[in-house]
View 1: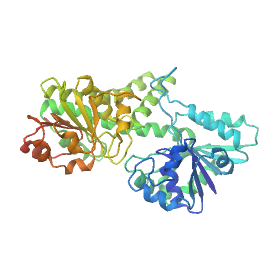
View 2 (view 1 turned 135 degrees about the horizontal axis):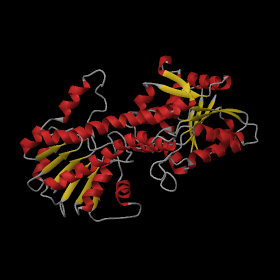
View 3 (view 1 turned 60 degrees about the vertical axis):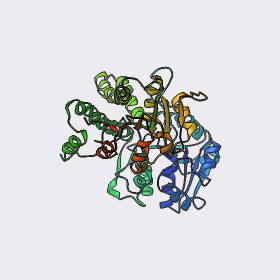
View 4 (view 1 turned 180 degrees about the vertical axis):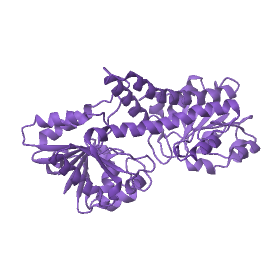
Length: 453
């Protein structure tokens, strides 16, 4: 069997590496038109950072895992074609700001239709709106090459920072297909691939539309829990309650559970906001404005939480941060990844710069040029925004420290040393509630945390 994956990003690369590792008899090729990205996958420095990913790629690469820019050739030879291209939110036209931009999906479908012949299984791995499979099938049907394709939905449920562990032991693998003899056969073919290492009862098969919708709904529910506890964090600060204690208490209820009840400066990443906005657009498209309005509030609350964090920094620093140095520790949207998409740090930095603060950012995995581009825009500069090479450099001379990403190394910092190098009073704002607040207060910091009075 030969598998081709179109798209060498956060989904395609790790997923195909794991399939190649666990299925050494299957030839797996990841293709992308971005030659620089493919070169990185073939180098010693992979284009994305995930704990454990280097080891998986090194073991399989060159054996049965390949990375190539030969899109047409690998489409022709593949039995199964995974589609793992980006589906960003539209920035133009109808649905701008909410609907998924499917131009890359359509382009891939046309490329497959142009080069593929015979029987193929096409697998949607990208996050897409319900009924996207119809678009792919319509384009495929217009091809005169004798292509007979079954389109399956196999959404990814990876969490960045734990993607390798998620692939090794997934909660579930979801595969949706057409309810027909041909569709059932295609589904079973993909089931047999995953069953090499995933327990059969963890592989769920559904109809095509249930699978497509499940990805959006899963992310919406997870984001909803974060926004819910973040809304309560504001109430905790106003009343003297402790959000961590509240979360622990309600999380003990087996009907609720403890996961995704960690209050913070706000969620980020490539999926949550994009997928909820897509879900709201779909609801409106199908004449369900009340449902759309319900899910919109999850994003509204998340945006408010980011603004609230930056506003509190300004308020506590005597209502002005103009010309004051603020150290922002962490820029990735979560620890153990270099992904900055929709990171809360972007909003926090922008809000502080709008107050004329001097902002100095440190992140162990995000390069300086990416920080500058994300905050200011491509090619733009601002002398008030700088990137440090260490946490100690970022904090030296800072009036306040804002912890925005929960990197483990921040817990190990010598805050006594940091405090000595700061103007007094020295402030620290823990946007992830990862530090020992009592210890910081004993050192002399004016300490503030999410959801704590």
